[in-house]
Image (cartoon, rainbow, N blue to C red; front, side, top):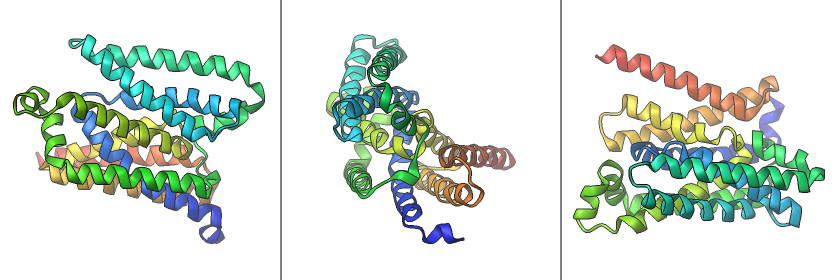
Length: 266
């Protein structure tokens, strides 16, 4: 149990606990808006930014964040152009992100091992700068969700009704996209770009399976994510497992239990 007192493990616990608040909250709104795959898209674009950060010797998470925010504007613009084919915008931006990342990988062969830590997660390497970034993102996301909970609820369930009621839908869509980009950029060093969508979507799936109201769903998604992240980190440290993969498998296990519980209720 010495690992619990290790400074690197304590930083991992703090970073994981913070992301376990913001990622499922944003994931819930994305799932309700049928944009669950946006997490995969922005995470792949973020990796291109991380690669560029290593290439030009700038803090990789910051460059990944810029890339993700730009991509979120691109997705929103394409969604407006292809209203009947919203998923097309996600596919286009993801393709561009993967292509750009592959080119940057070839330009900087010396840093590919560092980039791999962002692909698969490297929560044990979180430093204090990472924790400050994650904490700042958490504060921003929580402030927006608490202040605009009613507007976000209406937008998530019925965008047309929100528009008719006078809500500036376009700006709220951009706001959600930017917040999602912030969360994903802060998350990729914890669970990795290849697994970050799981932290966005699986807690939301659990919450929607068990919750009887939107308020309950908000609470449940955070509880599920916190349980998976904290217990997953403990198990990974105890048995020397990959932290990101352990967290995701625990999320899937919780989802299976949630679905079984839902069936018992019927």
